[in-house]
Image (tube, rainbow, N blue to C red):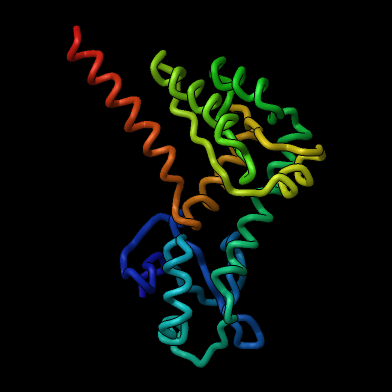
Length: 216
């Protein structure tokens, strides 16, 4: 078995697109997100649907060629690990000055091109999200970067990680600490199935640009 071949899809991929699993001393399957645990590992595409399928279809036993125990909620366990990793790195970025909070500051960071990504609490109002989305569209129109936005955490978790209260909107800035956050947010978002509103935003921008060209 290729070291980097998903045991579900049978496709090869880069390490960041996969999750490594090993067998612990108690014969339990253990996620190895940092890819540094000892022993033979197997790989699963880094999306929850694939982890759930590997567990349900007994694919770990086949991959390890041994009887192993798999937690009933292995997919949820991996989600929790990814979430804690992302929130922990977010807190470190805040201490490094790589995060701004509040709708107005987030919008300014987007329009100034300083934002690497935007975070909205799951409770964020449509109006608050819309204003920041408009700023993201405007940035793209002006030749700036497409700044992704994620709704991955409730307000309570964002507030706890960032040492604030009622944190609804945050922007992670394009600094070294911010890029470490970006990597983990991308991983968590991918694991949960992706953020379709970002794809829709980029499609809208492309459609608007095409329409403008047609009118010229």
